Amino acid sequence: MSLDPDPTAGPFLHLDVDTGHPFEKVIAAESAFHDLLRAVAREVTNRDGNPIRWQFVDASTNGVVRFRVTPEQIAKDLPPNAPTTIVDAIASGVAELEQAPDRPPYFSDQALDQAARLVALRQEVGSLGVRNGKVGSLITDTFRQHVDSLLGVHYYEDGSIEGRLEAVNVHDRSRFSVYDVLTRRPIKCNFGDRISIDQIAGALKKRVMVSGRIAYRANGVPISVTADELAVFPADDQLPRAADVRGLLR
Image (cartoon, rainbow, N blue to C red):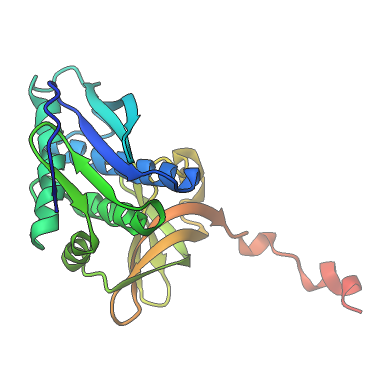
């Protein structure tokens, strides 16, 4: 469903959220939106890390809370039109995903993961919408169906996975892989700013438990996790021996 664009000049994006909902859910939606912006910006600029900083401009309310953000270049050698290209790619991409299950330009799997994370919060924050000066769109169940179709997702559940943390994606610095010993496949885990790079680096090659929102195929095999927490299991040589606990087992 389309929204009227905002005619304000300059590259910017609005995230619209209904009023009267728990503050922590609104913040979670803002976090997912921010991760979506960063994922698309990396694809547009073809740069590692975060070549664009998103500045909060203001918030207004008229039945919905409207967060307004604008891009600021960090990488100094980007084309001068890069911020506008990024903003247009995000706003038009959201609108296209509402219309059809076709991948928009610059929407990587990571961007789609964050779009899925955002729409998963819709029932907890009411309606969601994204707009800029050219196009605006509500995010509905149809949007979610189209994203899930592109990702091969059949359903989501909150929970945990266990496995060996094998690799961190140094291209965008916001994804790591956990090797599942049951399926013998890596599970991609998107962490955004919710887990520190230092914590992940310290868990490399170790058995871990990752908690968050898990996307599954129809056969129950996990595809990906929007990770909120990371816990490292102790190594075998750190586990207590039978002699250490013998006196406790009476």
